[in-house]
Image 1 (cartoon, one colour):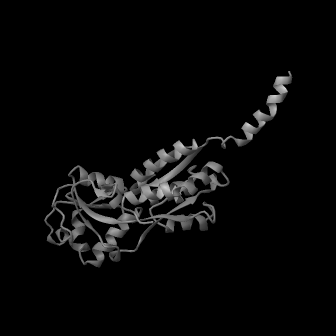
Image 2: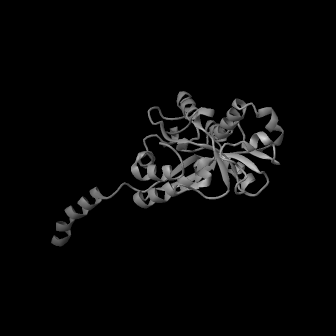
Image 3: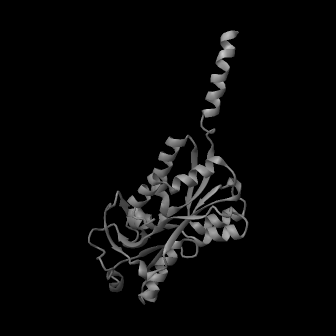
Length: 250
């Protein structure tokens, strides 16, 4: 009995020093951020014990789902306007929004040397189809429209559009050869700072508005320690190194 009493303070101290209980986090993630998020998730889960349950898709569709009561706790969007709108509408937590990355748009083909470094292949019309994410729901699709409009090529190229539901499907159209070209996110064709294959035109940022990508805590995630931990992790050095390795700016 004496031994049991003497051990009690040690047990209480151990309990006090133990990490917060591991928890699940429901996260909606823009499709362009799929590969970086998977790496970040693996590192975050290993470090904290929390479990990230991520769904990937278009920012516009996630907005509709969130407004219709989808139980997401964090939104990692492909723009900054949708999270702002959710905050204004009371569906996201004020003061939690921040820019986690600035995306880059590229014109890409899975065929080597098919796309030149200046994108003049668009003017030539020498291609079957050009894939583009739905500009109504996907910020990268909207940026692609802005680029073609600015270059005076929209009317010429539009008849050859094949529209993806999101940037992931757009990439799939090109990678499978169903479209010769596609406007995709640099993160989809870059790994560890290098293009993984095919040929690409790195579209100058001056041809479209900056693709600022914001994260925000949604109402179901308010005051949840695991959610706060993920948001802080996204701002940290390890996550930022992963984000940069996929071609994003911070």
